[in-house]
Image (cartoon, rainbow, N blue to C red; front, side):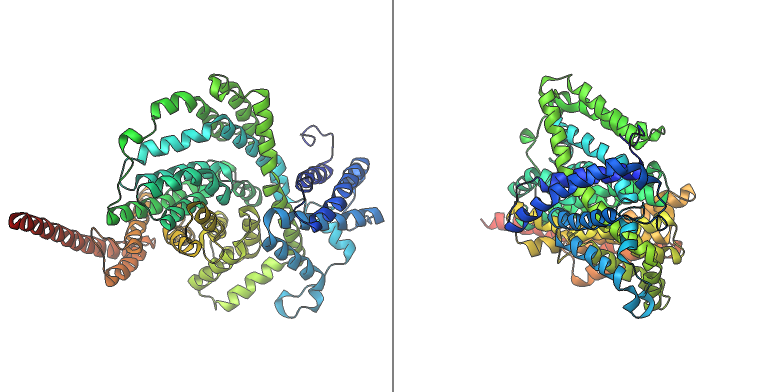
Length: 605
Protein backbone atom coordinates (compact mmCIF):
# COMPACT_ATOMS: atom_id res chain seq x y z
CA UNK A 1 0.00 0.00 0.00
CA UNK A 2 2.91 2.32 0.78
CA UNK A 3 4.16 1.73 -2.74
CA UNK A 4 0.80 2.55 -4.31
CA UNK A 5 0.58 5.75 -2.28
CA UNK A 6 4.10 6.72 -3.39
CA UNK A 7 5.09 7.22 0.24
CA UNK A 8 8.09 4.90 -0.02
CA UNK A 9 10.12 4.12 -3.18
CA UNK A 10 9.57 0.64 -4.63
CA UNK A 11 12.90 -0.92 -3.63
CA UNK A 12 12.73 0.55 -0.12
CA UNK A 13 9.14 -0.65 0.18
CA UNK A 14 10.22 -4.20 -0.67
CA UNK A 15 13.09 -4.12 1.82
CA UNK A 16 10.75 -2.98 4.60
CA UNK A 17 8.09 -5.55 3.64
CA UNK A 18 10.56 -8.45 3.71
CA UNK A 19 12.02 -7.23 7.00
CA UNK A 20 8.55 -7.24 8.58
CA UNK A 21 7.90 -10.75 7.22
CA UNK A 22 11.20 -11.91 8.70
CA UNK A 23 10.12 -10.42 12.03
CA UNK A 24 7.18 -12.86 11.96
CA UNK A 25 9.67 -15.73 11.63
CA UNK A 26 12.02 -14.63 14.40
CA UNK A 27 9.31 -13.62 16.86
CA UNK A 28 8.21 -17.24 17.13
CA UNK A 29 9.45 -19.07 20.26
CA UNK A 30 12.90 -20.57 19.77
CA UNK A 31 13.07 -24.37 19.54
CA UNK A 32 16.79 -24.69 20.24
CA UNK A 33 19.78 -22.85 21.64
CA UNK A 34 20.85 -21.89 18.12
CA UNK A 35 17.44 -20.35 17.40
CA UNK A 36 17.64 -18.32 20.63
CA UNK A 37 21.01 -16.94 19.52
CA UNK A 38 19.81 -16.21 15.97
CA UNK A 39 16.65 -14.54 17.30
CA UNK A 40 18.72 -12.29 19.54
CA UNK A 41 20.87 -11.29 16.56
CA UNK A 42 18.22 -11.08 13.83
CA UNK A 43 15.49 -9.03 15.52
CA UNK A 44 17.63 -5.94 16.31
CA UNK A 45 19.37 -6.20 12.91
CA UNK A 46 16.03 -6.22 11.10
CA UNK A 47 14.86 -3.25 13.13
CA UNK A 48 18.08 -1.43 12.21
CA UNK A 49 17.56 -2.30 8.53
CA UNK A 50 14.02 -0.87 8.55
CA UNK A 51 15.14 2.39 10.20
CA UNK A 52 18.13 2.66 7.86
CA UNK A 53 15.91 2.09 4.82
CA UNK A 54 13.37 4.69 5.94
CA UNK A 55 16.14 7.26 6.38
CA UNK A 56 18.02 6.39 3.18
CA UNK A 57 15.10 5.23 1.03
CA UNK A 58 15.43 7.94 -1.62
CA UNK A 59 19.19 7.39 -2.01
CA UNK A 60 18.74 3.61 -2.24
CA UNK A 61 15.99 3.99 -4.84
CA UNK A 62 17.75 6.56 -7.04
CA UNK A 63 21.34 5.25 -6.98
CA UNK A 64 22.63 3.60 -10.15
CA UNK A 65 23.51 -0.02 -9.48
CA UNK A 66 27.19 -0.98 -9.99
CA UNK A 67 28.09 2.66 -10.67
CA UNK A 68 27.24 4.48 -7.43
CA UNK A 69 29.45 2.93 -4.78
CA UNK A 70 27.83 1.21 -1.79
CA UNK A 71 28.58 2.63 1.65
CA UNK A 72 30.12 0.47 4.36
CA UNK A 73 26.75 0.43 6.13
CA UNK A 74 25.08 -0.71 2.89
CA UNK A 75 27.53 -3.61 2.65
CA UNK A 76 27.16 -4.54 6.31
CA UNK A 77 23.35 -4.57 6.27
CA UNK A 78 23.32 -6.36 2.92
CA UNK A 79 25.47 -9.19 4.29
CA UNK A 80 23.36 -9.33 7.45
CA UNK A 81 20.12 -9.52 5.44
CA UNK A 82 21.40 -12.47 3.39
CA UNK A 83 22.51 -14.34 6.53
CA UNK A 84 19.20 -13.65 8.28
CA UNK A 85 17.27 -14.70 5.16
CA UNK A 86 19.18 -18.00 4.99
CA UNK A 87 18.30 -18.79 8.61
CA UNK A 88 14.65 -17.85 8.00
CA UNK A 89 14.64 -20.09 4.93
CA UNK A 90 15.95 -22.98 7.02
CA UNK A 91 13.12 -22.51 9.52
CA UNK A 92 10.33 -21.97 7.01
CA UNK A 93 11.29 -24.14 4.03
CA UNK A 94 13.77 -26.61 5.48
CA UNK A 95 17.37 -27.45 4.70
CA UNK A 96 16.84 -28.42 1.04
CA UNK A 97 16.21 -24.88 -0.20
CA UNK A 98 18.78 -23.42 2.22
CA UNK A 99 21.50 -25.72 0.88
CA UNK A 100 20.58 -25.01 -2.75
CA UNK A 101 20.67 -21.24 -2.19
CA UNK A 102 24.02 -21.58 -0.40
CA UNK A 103 25.41 -23.58 -3.34
CA UNK A 104 24.39 -20.80 -5.73
CA UNK A 105 26.04 -18.20 -3.50
CA UNK A 106 29.28 -20.21 -3.48
CA UNK A 107 28.99 -20.69 -7.25
CA UNK A 108 28.71 -16.92 -7.64
CA UNK A 109 32.06 -16.36 -5.93
CA UNK A 110 33.97 -19.38 -7.33
CA UNK A 111 33.09 -18.82 -11.00
CA UNK A 112 36.65 -18.14 -12.27
CA UNK A 113 37.90 -21.43 -10.79
CA UNK A 114 35.13 -23.64 -12.23
CA UNK A 115 36.18 -25.49 -15.40
CA UNK A 116 34.14 -25.91 -18.57
CA UNK A 117 30.89 -24.33 -19.71
CA UNK A 118 29.79 -23.34 -16.20
CA UNK A 119 32.73 -20.96 -15.62
CA UNK A 120 32.12 -17.21 -15.22
CA UNK A 121 34.06 -14.16 -14.06
CA UNK A 122 32.73 -14.27 -10.48
CA UNK A 123 31.42 -11.71 -8.00
CA UNK A 124 33.21 -9.45 -5.59
CA UNK A 125 31.50 -8.96 -2.22
CA UNK A 126 30.39 -5.47 -3.27
CA UNK A 127 28.98 -6.54 -6.65
CA UNK A 128 27.21 -9.51 -5.06
CA UNK A 129 25.49 -7.31 -2.45
CA UNK A 130 24.65 -4.76 -5.14
CA UNK A 131 23.02 -7.47 -7.26
CA UNK A 132 21.18 -9.24 -4.47
CA UNK A 133 20.07 -6.44 -2.13
CA UNK A 134 20.28 -3.03 -3.77
CA UNK A 135 18.78 -3.76 -7.16
CA UNK A 136 15.59 -5.37 -8.47
CA UNK A 137 17.48 -8.34 -9.88
CA UNK A 138 18.02 -10.39 -6.74
CA UNK A 139 16.18 -10.81 -3.45
CA UNK A 140 13.83 -7.93 -4.27
CA UNK A 141 13.07 -8.98 -7.83
CA UNK A 142 10.01 -10.49 -9.50
CA UNK A 143 9.05 -13.15 -6.89
CA UNK A 144 8.92 -10.89 -3.84
CA UNK A 145 7.33 -8.17 -5.98
CA UNK A 146 4.53 -10.57 -6.90
CA UNK A 147 4.02 -11.47 -3.23
CA UNK A 148 3.64 -7.80 -2.32
CA UNK A 149 1.48 -6.84 -5.30
CA UNK A 150 -0.83 -9.87 -5.57
CA UNK A 151 -0.18 -12.91 -3.43
CA UNK A 152 -0.55 -11.18 -0.06
CA UNK A 153 -4.10 -10.07 -0.90
CA UNK A 154 -5.10 -13.57 -1.99
CA UNK A 155 -3.62 -15.04 1.19
CA UNK A 156 -5.81 -12.67 3.21
CA UNK A 157 -8.86 -13.51 1.07
CA UNK A 158 -8.27 -17.24 1.57
CA UNK A 159 -7.86 -16.80 5.33
CA UNK A 160 -11.17 -14.88 5.55
CA UNK A 161 -12.96 -17.45 3.35
CA UNK A 162 -11.79 -20.39 5.47
CA UNK A 163 -12.40 -18.61 8.78
CA UNK A 164 -15.96 -17.65 7.83
CA UNK A 165 -16.83 -21.27 7.05
CA UNK A 166 -16.58 -21.27 3.25
CA UNK A 167 -14.17 -24.20 3.29
CA UNK A 168 -16.78 -26.43 4.94
CA UNK A 169 -19.12 -25.92 1.99
CA UNK A 170 -16.47 -27.31 -0.39
CA UNK A 171 -16.22 -30.49 1.69
CA UNK A 172 -19.98 -30.90 2.19
CA UNK A 173 -20.71 -30.31 -1.50
CA UNK A 174 -18.02 -32.79 -2.58
CA UNK A 175 -19.40 -35.50 -0.28
CA UNK A 176 -22.98 -34.90 -1.43
CA UNK A 177 -22.00 -34.98 -5.11
CA UNK A 178 -19.78 -38.08 -5.01
CA UNK A 179 -19.94 -39.62 -1.54
CA UNK A 180 -22.84 -41.98 -2.33
CA UNK A 181 -21.11 -43.59 -5.36
CA UNK A 182 -18.75 -46.58 -5.20
CA UNK A 183 -15.53 -45.38 -3.62
CA UNK A 184 -17.49 -42.23 -2.77
CA UNK A 185 -15.35 -40.84 0.08
CA UNK A 186 -12.22 -41.02 -2.10
CA UNK A 187 -14.04 -39.30 -4.97
CA UNK A 188 -15.24 -36.64 -2.55
CA UNK A 189 -11.64 -36.18 -1.38
CA UNK A 190 -10.55 -35.63 -4.99
CA UNK A 191 -13.21 -32.95 -5.53
CA UNK A 192 -12.75 -31.20 -2.17
CA UNK A 193 -8.95 -31.22 -2.32
CA UNK A 194 -9.00 -29.83 -5.85
CA UNK A 195 -11.29 -26.98 -4.81
CA UNK A 196 -9.47 -26.20 -1.57
CA UNK A 197 -6.01 -26.71 -3.05
CA UNK A 198 -6.56 -24.02 -5.64
CA UNK A 199 -6.79 -21.39 -2.93
CA UNK A 200 -4.49 -22.86 -0.25
CA UNK A 201 -1.23 -22.63 -2.23
CA UNK A 202 0.42 -25.55 -0.44
CA UNK A 203 0.10 -29.27 -1.10
CA UNK A 204 1.06 -30.17 2.47
CA UNK A 205 -1.32 -27.59 4.00
CA UNK A 206 -4.11 -28.90 1.78
CA UNK A 207 -3.44 -32.48 2.91
CA UNK A 208 -3.68 -31.37 6.54
CA UNK A 209 -6.78 -29.23 5.95
CA UNK A 210 -8.95 -31.68 3.98
CA UNK A 211 -7.21 -34.95 4.83
CA UNK A 212 -8.08 -34.73 8.51
CA UNK A 213 -11.71 -35.20 7.46
CA UNK A 214 -11.56 -37.24 4.23
CA UNK A 215 -8.93 -39.85 5.18
CA UNK A 216 -10.86 -41.28 8.18
CA UNK A 217 -14.00 -41.30 6.01
CA UNK A 218 -12.22 -43.31 3.30
CA UNK A 219 -10.87 -45.78 5.84
CA UNK A 220 -14.33 -46.18 7.34
CA UNK A 221 -15.75 -47.34 3.98
CA UNK A 222 -13.04 -49.94 3.36
CA UNK A 223 -10.09 -48.16 1.77
CA UNK A 224 -6.73 -49.38 3.15
CA UNK A 225 -4.83 -46.70 5.07
CA UNK A 226 -2.09 -46.24 2.47
CA UNK A 227 -4.61 -45.97 -0.39
CA UNK A 228 -6.67 -43.36 1.48
CA UNK A 229 -3.52 -41.36 2.19
CA UNK A 230 -2.30 -41.69 -1.41
CA UNK A 231 -5.60 -40.44 -2.85
CA UNK A 232 -5.56 -37.42 -0.55
CA UNK A 233 -1.92 -36.62 -1.36
CA UNK A 234 -2.45 -36.89 -5.12
CA UNK A 235 -5.60 -34.74 -5.05
CA UNK A 236 -4.12 -32.12 -2.72
CA UNK A 237 -0.97 -31.76 -4.82
CA UNK A 238 -2.99 -31.03 -7.95
CA UNK A 239 -4.87 -28.17 -6.31
CA UNK A 240 -2.21 -25.70 -7.43
CA UNK A 241 -2.79 -26.73 -11.03
CA UNK A 242 -6.49 -25.84 -10.81
CA UNK A 243 -7.77 -22.36 -11.78
CA UNK A 244 -8.92 -19.83 -10.80
CA UNK A 245 -6.25 -19.15 -8.15
CA UNK A 246 -3.70 -21.97 -8.68
CA UNK A 247 -1.73 -21.14 -5.55
CA UNK A 248 1.00 -18.50 -5.54
CA UNK A 249 3.11 -19.89 -8.40
CA UNK A 250 0.66 -18.74 -11.08
CA UNK A 251 1.17 -15.11 -10.02
CA UNK A 252 4.93 -15.55 -10.39
CA UNK A 253 4.35 -17.19 -13.79
CA UNK A 254 2.34 -14.17 -14.93
CA UNK A 255 5.14 -11.83 -13.87
CA UNK A 256 7.91 -13.84 -15.53
CA UNK A 257 6.13 -14.66 -18.81
CA UNK A 258 4.32 -11.38 -19.28
CA UNK A 259 1.06 -13.22 -19.99
CA UNK A 260 -2.05 -12.05 -18.17
CA UNK A 261 -3.19 -14.06 -15.19
CA UNK A 262 -6.46 -14.78 -17.00
CA UNK A 263 -4.59 -16.22 -19.99
CA UNK A 264 -2.56 -18.52 -17.72
CA UNK A 265 -5.63 -19.67 -15.78
CA UNK A 266 -7.61 -20.41 -18.96
CA UNK A 267 -4.69 -22.28 -20.52
CA UNK A 268 -4.18 -24.36 -17.38
CA UNK A 269 -7.85 -25.37 -17.03
CA UNK A 270 -8.04 -28.41 -19.36
CA UNK A 271 -4.72 -29.96 -18.23
CA UNK A 272 -5.83 -29.58 -14.60
CA UNK A 273 -9.20 -31.21 -15.30
CA UNK A 274 -7.43 -34.10 -17.07
CA UNK A 275 -5.11 -34.51 -14.08
CA UNK A 276 -8.11 -34.89 -11.76
CA UNK A 277 -9.91 -37.09 -14.28
CA UNK A 278 -6.98 -39.51 -14.04
CA UNK A 279 -7.15 -39.67 -10.24
CA UNK A 280 -10.95 -39.94 -10.29
CA UNK A 281 -10.80 -42.78 -12.82
CA UNK A 282 -8.29 -44.73 -10.75
CA UNK A 283 -10.39 -44.30 -7.62
CA UNK A 284 -13.47 -45.60 -9.45
CA UNK A 285 -11.58 -48.57 -10.93
CA UNK A 286 -10.01 -49.43 -7.57
CA UNK A 287 -13.41 -49.32 -5.87
CA UNK A 288 -14.94 -51.45 -8.63
CA UNK A 289 -12.11 -53.98 -8.39
CA UNK A 290 -12.37 -54.27 -4.61
CA UNK A 291 -16.15 -53.97 -4.25
CA UNK A 292 -16.01 -50.77 -2.19
CA UNK A 293 -19.29 -48.97 -1.60
CA UNK A 294 -20.10 -45.35 -0.95
CA UNK A 295 -21.52 -43.59 2.08
CA UNK A 296 -25.07 -44.50 3.03
CA UNK A 297 -27.45 -41.81 1.84
CA UNK A 298 -28.79 -41.20 5.32
CA UNK A 299 -25.22 -40.43 6.46
CA UNK A 300 -24.54 -37.82 3.77
CA UNK A 301 -24.49 -34.17 4.85
CA UNK A 302 -27.53 -32.14 3.90
CA UNK A 303 -26.39 -30.10 0.89
CA UNK A 304 -29.42 -27.82 1.00
CA UNK A 305 -28.66 -27.01 4.61
CA UNK A 306 -24.96 -26.40 3.82
CA UNK A 307 -25.85 -24.07 0.95
CA UNK A 308 -28.27 -22.16 3.19
CA UNK A 309 -25.58 -21.82 5.84
CA UNK A 310 -22.53 -21.08 3.66
CA UNK A 311 -23.72 -20.52 0.07
CA UNK A 312 -23.51 -16.74 0.27
CA UNK A 313 -19.78 -17.06 0.95
CA UNK A 314 -19.25 -18.40 -2.58
CA UNK A 315 -20.37 -15.08 -4.10
CA UNK A 316 -17.02 -13.36 -3.35
CA UNK A 317 -15.20 -16.30 -4.99
CA UNK A 318 -17.28 -15.80 -8.14
CA UNK A 319 -16.79 -12.03 -8.09
CA UNK A 320 -13.04 -12.58 -7.67
CA UNK A 321 -13.00 -14.38 -11.02
CA UNK A 322 -15.28 -11.74 -12.57
CA UNK A 323 -13.10 -8.86 -11.34
CA UNK A 324 -10.03 -10.50 -12.88
CA UNK A 325 -11.90 -11.26 -16.12
CA UNK A 326 -13.04 -7.64 -16.63
CA UNK A 327 -9.51 -6.31 -16.22
CA UNK A 328 -9.22 -5.31 -12.56
CA UNK A 329 -5.70 -5.59 -11.19
CA UNK A 330 -5.11 -8.69 -9.09
CA UNK A 331 -4.55 -6.49 -6.04
CA UNK A 332 -7.87 -4.70 -6.56
CA UNK A 333 -9.70 -7.99 -7.25
CA UNK A 334 -8.35 -9.51 -4.04
CA UNK A 335 -9.16 -6.46 -1.91
CA UNK A 336 -12.68 -5.98 -3.32
CA UNK A 337 -13.53 -9.66 -2.89
CA UNK A 338 -12.26 -9.69 0.70
CA UNK A 339 -14.36 -6.63 1.58
CA UNK A 340 -17.41 -8.20 -0.12
CA UNK A 341 -16.81 -11.43 1.82
CA UNK A 342 -16.79 -9.54 5.12
CA UNK A 343 -20.02 -7.71 4.25
CA UNK A 344 -21.82 -10.87 3.06
CA UNK A 345 -20.74 -12.80 6.13
CA UNK A 346 -23.22 -10.73 8.16
CA UNK A 347 -26.15 -12.38 6.34
CA UNK A 348 -25.95 -15.28 8.80
CA UNK A 349 -24.99 -15.24 12.44
CA UNK A 350 -22.73 -18.31 12.27
CA UNK A 351 -20.63 -16.87 9.41
CA UNK A 352 -20.53 -13.31 10.73
CA UNK A 353 -16.99 -11.88 10.59
CA UNK A 354 -16.96 -9.94 13.85
CA UNK A 355 -13.97 -7.71 14.67
CA UNK A 356 -12.42 -10.55 16.68
CA UNK A 357 -12.93 -13.03 13.82
CA UNK A 358 -11.41 -10.53 11.37
CA UNK A 359 -8.39 -10.13 13.61
CA UNK A 360 -8.06 -13.92 13.87
CA UNK A 361 -8.34 -14.29 10.06
CA UNK A 362 -5.67 -11.64 9.58
CA UNK A 363 -3.49 -13.45 12.11
CA UNK A 364 -3.90 -16.70 10.17
CA UNK A 365 -3.10 -14.90 6.91
CA UNK A 366 0.02 -13.30 8.37
CA UNK A 367 0.99 -16.64 9.91
CA UNK A 368 1.03 -18.26 6.45
CA UNK A 369 2.72 -15.30 4.71
CA UNK A 370 6.33 -16.26 5.60
CA UNK A 371 5.86 -19.72 4.07
CA UNK A 372 5.47 -18.01 0.68
CA UNK A 373 7.42 -14.74 1.01
CA UNK A 374 10.60 -16.21 2.52
CA UNK A 375 11.09 -18.91 -0.18
CA UNK A 376 10.37 -16.25 -2.84
CA UNK A 377 13.06 -14.00 -1.38
CA UNK A 378 15.50 -16.91 -1.14
CA UNK A 379 14.76 -17.84 -4.74
CA UNK A 380 15.57 -14.23 -5.62
CA UNK A 381 19.19 -14.93 -4.65
CA UNK A 382 19.24 -17.77 -7.16
CA UNK A 383 17.73 -15.48 -9.82
CA UNK A 384 20.45 -12.90 -9.19
CA UNK A 385 23.21 -15.48 -9.61
CA UNK A 386 21.66 -17.21 -12.64
CA UNK A 387 20.96 -13.98 -14.54
CA UNK A 388 24.32 -12.37 -13.73
CA UNK A 389 26.36 -15.45 -14.69
CA UNK A 390 24.22 -16.65 -17.64
CA UNK A 391 23.97 -19.99 -15.83
CA UNK A 392 20.58 -20.74 -17.39
CA UNK A 393 22.06 -20.48 -20.89
CA UNK A 394 25.14 -22.54 -19.95
CA UNK A 395 23.02 -25.22 -18.26
CA UNK A 396 20.76 -25.35 -21.30
CA UNK A 397 23.75 -25.93 -23.59
CA UNK A 398 25.07 -28.70 -21.33
CA UNK A 399 21.69 -30.49 -21.36
CA UNK A 400 21.37 -30.25 -25.14
CA UNK A 401 24.88 -31.62 -25.63
CA UNK A 402 24.22 -34.51 -23.22
CA UNK A 403 20.95 -35.39 -24.98
CA UNK A 404 22.71 -35.33 -28.37
CA UNK A 405 19.86 -33.34 -29.91
CA UNK A 406 17.20 -35.96 -29.12
CA UNK A 407 14.05 -33.99 -28.26
CA UNK A 408 12.26 -36.61 -26.15
CA UNK A 409 15.46 -37.55 -24.32
CA UNK A 410 15.98 -33.87 -23.49
CA UNK A 411 12.41 -33.56 -22.19
CA UNK A 412 12.91 -36.68 -20.07
CA UNK A 413 16.17 -35.31 -18.61
CA UNK A 414 14.44 -32.00 -17.83
CA UNK A 415 11.60 -33.88 -16.10
CA UNK A 416 14.07 -35.73 -13.84
CA UNK A 417 15.96 -32.53 -12.99
CA UNK A 418 12.70 -30.66 -12.23
CA UNK A 419 11.52 -33.42 -9.88
CA UNK A 420 14.89 -33.55 -8.09
CA UNK A 421 15.08 -29.75 -7.74
CA UNK A 422 11.51 -29.65 -6.44
CA UNK A 423 11.99 -32.28 -3.75
CA UNK A 424 11.53 -30.95 -0.25
CA UNK A 425 10.94 -27.34 -1.33
CA UNK A 426 7.91 -25.04 -1.39
CA UNK A 427 6.16 -24.95 -4.77
CA UNK A 428 7.01 -21.32 -5.53
CA UNK A 429 10.75 -21.64 -4.97
CA UNK A 430 10.84 -24.98 -6.80
CA UNK A 431 9.04 -23.41 -9.77
CA UNK A 432 11.39 -20.41 -9.89
CA UNK A 433 14.50 -22.59 -9.79
CA UNK A 434 13.35 -24.91 -12.57
CA UNK A 435 12.19 -21.98 -14.69
CA UNK A 436 15.62 -20.36 -14.47
CA UNK A 437 17.52 -23.53 -15.28
CA UNK A 438 15.15 -25.55 -17.48
CA UNK A 439 12.87 -23.23 -19.47
CA UNK A 440 15.65 -21.89 -21.74
CA UNK A 441 16.33 -25.48 -22.83
CA UNK A 442 12.65 -26.22 -23.48
CA UNK A 443 12.21 -23.00 -25.48
CA UNK A 444 15.31 -23.85 -27.55
CA UNK A 445 13.51 -27.03 -28.61
CA UNK A 446 10.83 -24.89 -30.26
CA UNK A 447 8.25 -25.03 -27.47
CA UNK A 448 6.10 -21.89 -26.86
CA UNK A 449 6.98 -20.00 -23.68
CA UNK A 450 3.76 -20.71 -21.75
CA UNK A 451 3.89 -24.42 -22.65
CA UNK A 452 7.49 -24.54 -21.43
CA UNK A 453 6.57 -22.94 -18.11
CA UNK A 454 3.66 -25.32 -17.53
CA UNK A 455 5.89 -28.29 -18.42
CA UNK A 456 8.45 -27.52 -15.72
CA UNK A 457 5.77 -26.35 -13.25
CA UNK A 458 3.98 -29.70 -13.41
CA UNK A 459 7.10 -31.70 -12.65
CA UNK A 460 8.30 -29.37 -9.89
CA UNK A 461 4.88 -29.78 -8.27
CA UNK A 462 4.76 -33.57 -8.75
CA UNK A 463 7.89 -33.90 -6.61
CA UNK A 464 5.44 -33.70 -3.67
CA UNK A 465 4.19 -37.20 -4.54
CA UNK A 466 7.37 -38.67 -6.01
CA UNK A 467 9.49 -40.87 -3.73
CA UNK A 468 11.91 -40.65 -2.03
CA UNK A 469 10.97 -37.09 -0.89
CA UNK A 470 7.18 -37.12 -1.33
CA UNK A 471 6.23 -34.56 1.34
CA UNK A 472 2.49 -34.50 0.61
CA UNK A 473 2.33 -38.30 0.61
CA UNK A 474 4.28 -38.62 3.85
CA UNK A 475 2.07 -36.00 5.54
CA UNK A 476 -1.05 -37.90 4.45
CA UNK A 477 0.52 -41.17 5.65
CA UNK A 478 0.95 -39.61 9.09
CA UNK A 479 -2.74 -38.69 9.25
CA UNK A 480 -3.80 -42.14 8.01
CA UNK A 481 -1.29 -43.98 10.22
CA UNK A 482 -0.07 -45.73 7.08
CA UNK A 483 3.29 -46.89 5.79
CA UNK A 484 4.97 -43.80 4.31
CA UNK A 485 6.86 -45.64 1.55
CA UNK A 486 3.78 -47.56 0.34
CA UNK A 487 1.78 -44.33 0.43
CA UNK A 488 4.43 -42.52 -1.61
CA UNK A 489 4.47 -45.12 -4.38
CA UNK A 490 0.66 -45.36 -4.53
CA UNK A 491 0.37 -41.55 -4.67
CA UNK A 492 2.87 -41.61 -7.55
CA UNK A 493 0.61 -44.15 -9.28
CA UNK A 494 -2.52 -42.04 -8.79
CA UNK A 495 -0.79 -39.04 -10.42
CA UNK A 496 0.49 -40.96 -13.45
CA UNK A 497 -1.70 -38.81 -15.71
CA UNK A 498 0.12 -35.74 -14.40
CA UNK A 499 3.41 -37.17 -15.68
CA UNK A 500 1.95 -37.61 -19.18
CA UNK A 501 0.02 -34.34 -19.61
CA UNK A 502 3.12 -32.06 -19.75
CA UNK A 503 4.47 -34.05 -22.70
CA UNK A 504 1.21 -33.46 -24.55
CA UNK A 505 1.43 -29.74 -23.73
CA UNK A 506 4.91 -29.36 -25.25
CA UNK A 507 4.01 -31.54 -28.24
CA UNK A 508 0.85 -29.65 -29.19
CA UNK A 509 -0.71 -26.52 -27.61
CA UNK A 510 -4.24 -27.87 -28.19
CA UNK A 511 -4.62 -28.74 -24.49
CA UNK A 512 -4.03 -25.04 -23.78
CA UNK A 513 -7.07 -24.28 -26.00
CA UNK A 514 -4.89 -23.04 -28.87
CA UNK A 515 -5.59 -24.10 -32.45
CA UNK A 516 -8.67 -25.05 -34.51
CA UNK A 517 -11.69 -25.96 -32.37
CA UNK A 518 -12.09 -29.42 -33.96
CA UNK A 519 -8.44 -30.32 -33.25
CA UNK A 520 -8.60 -28.98 -29.68
CA UNK A 521 -11.70 -31.12 -29.03
CA UNK A 522 -10.07 -34.19 -30.63
CA UNK A 523 -6.83 -33.88 -28.63
CA UNK A 524 -8.77 -33.42 -25.38
CA UNK A 525 -10.90 -36.51 -26.18
CA UNK A 526 -7.99 -38.80 -27.11
CA UNK A 527 -5.87 -37.60 -24.17
CA UNK A 528 -8.73 -38.23 -21.74
CA UNK A 529 -9.32 -41.69 -23.21
CA UNK A 530 -5.60 -42.43 -23.07
CA UNK A 531 -5.44 -41.38 -19.42
CA UNK A 532 -8.41 -43.63 -18.65
CA UNK A 533 -6.76 -46.62 -20.32
CA UNK A 534 -3.53 -45.82 -18.47
CA UNK A 535 -5.54 -45.74 -15.23
CA UNK A 536 -6.93 -49.19 -16.08
CA UNK A 537 -3.38 -50.47 -16.56
CA UNK A 538 -2.12 -48.99 -13.29
CA UNK A 539 -5.12 -50.36 -11.37
CA UNK A 540 -5.07 -53.72 -13.16
CA UNK A 541 -8.77 -53.65 -13.99
CA UNK A 542 -10.34 -53.81 -17.48
CA UNK A 543 -13.92 -54.72 -16.47
CA UNK A 544 -12.20 -57.64 -14.73
CA UNK A 545 -8.74 -58.44 -13.35
CA UNK A 546 -6.12 -57.79 -16.04
CA UNK A 547 -3.09 -59.95 -16.72
CA UNK A 548 0.44 -58.51 -16.79
CA UNK A 549 0.44 -58.72 -20.58
CA UNK A 550 -2.86 -56.82 -20.77
CA UNK A 551 -1.56 -54.14 -18.43
CA UNK A 552 1.64 -53.64 -20.46
CA UNK A 553 -0.39 -53.57 -23.68
CA UNK A 554 -2.68 -51.02 -22.04
CA UNK A 555 0.23 -48.68 -21.39
CA UNK A 556 1.33 -48.94 -25.03
CA UNK A 557 -2.06 -48.18 -26.55
CA UNK A 558 -2.68 -45.44 -23.96
CA UNK A 559 0.50 -43.71 -25.14
CA UNK A 560 -0.69 -44.10 -28.75
CA UNK A 561 -3.87 -42.26 -27.80
CA UNK A 562 -2.10 -39.58 -25.79
CA UNK A 563 0.48 -38.68 -28.48
CA UNK A 564 -1.23 -35.80 -30.36
CA UNK A 565 -1.03 -37.21 -33.89
CA UNK A 566 -3.94 -38.48 -35.98
CA UNK A 567 -2.25 -41.74 -37.09
CA UNK A 568 -1.30 -42.82 -33.56
CA UNK A 569 -4.78 -41.86 -32.38
CA UNK A 570 -6.41 -44.19 -34.94
CA UNK A 571 -4.06 -47.03 -33.97
CA UNK A 572 -4.74 -46.41 -30.29
CA UNK A 573 -8.52 -46.26 -30.76
CA UNK A 574 -8.54 -49.49 -32.76
CA UNK A 575 -6.51 -51.41 -30.18
CA UNK A 576 -8.46 -49.82 -27.33
CA UNK A 577 -11.84 -50.85 -28.79
CA UNK A 578 -10.65 -54.41 -29.42
CA UNK A 579 -9.08 -54.98 -25.98
CA UNK A 580 -11.89 -53.33 -24.02
CA UNK A 581 -14.43 -55.42 -25.93
CA UNK A 582 -12.49 -58.61 -25.12
CA UNK A 583 -12.18 -57.55 -21.48
CA UNK A 584 -15.90 -56.83 -21.30
CA UNK A 585 -16.71 -60.28 -22.77
CA UNK A 586 -14.30 -61.89 -20.32
CA UNK A 587 -15.91 -60.07 -17.39
CA UNK A 588 -19.41 -61.05 -18.57
CA UNK A 589 -18.33 -64.69 -18.91
CA UNK A 590 -16.83 -64.69 -15.41
CA UNK A 591 -20.02 -63.16 -14.04
CA UNK A 592 -22.21 -65.77 -15.79
CA UNK A 593 -20.01 -68.60 -14.49
CA UNK A 594 -20.22 -67.14 -10.99
CA UNK A 595 -24.04 -66.99 -11.17
CA UNK A 596 -24.21 -70.58 -12.52
CA UNK A 597 -21.97 -71.79 -9.69
CA UNK A 598 -24.11 -70.01 -7.09
CA UNK A 599 -27.29 -71.58 -8.53
CA UNK A 600 -25.64 -75.02 -8.55
CA UNK A 601 -24.54 -74.65 -4.94
CA UNK A 602 -28.05 -73.57 -3.96
CA UNK A 603 -29.64 -76.59 -5.71
CA UNK A 604 -27.24 -78.99 -3.98
CA UNK A 605 -28.16 -77.51 -0.63
